[in-house]
Amino acid sequence: AADKNTPLNPAIASFGKFYPMGVAQVAIDKAEFADKFGDIGPPEGHRFLIVSWSIKNVQPVEVNIGGTATLRGALQVKLKDADGEDVPFESSLYFRASSEARIEDHAIAPGDTYKVRAVLTVPKSDKPYKLAQFFLSDSPGPTYSITIDFSNIK
Image 1 (cartoon, rainbow, N blue to C red):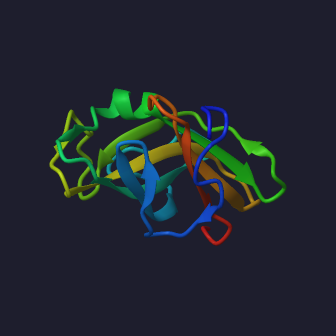
Image 2 (image 1 turned 30 degrees about the vertical axis):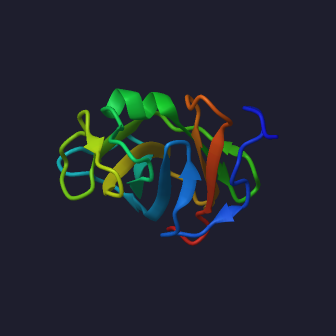
């Protein structure tokens, strides 16, 4: 049996495919770099990595995903460059998929899907990012992770 130190879903995931993450299934829909997000610009020498993802409630009851602070606490992100080195990033904020509105507490009905965007402030680099790994860290069971190959994201 897996324990909290053995992430489930360890293989490289495909964009748009749902993977189990605790009480929900999560799909990474797309990722892109941007020099602005709405009216916000990154600090000097940085850019934004915007990751769009979908959360599907597979439970028979509503699942509350919480707001930005809850998502930031529950979903841990690791980035690696093409050489396998860790890429530090300064912050992650969570927004609705179709606007610059921050995520507030949101209940997802059974069977429904909710779309969000994570906006990470990352250093500008000529090296491509190879992998991004998303860990659900506060689930009561084992740790879940989704690893995405970002090498084609410019």
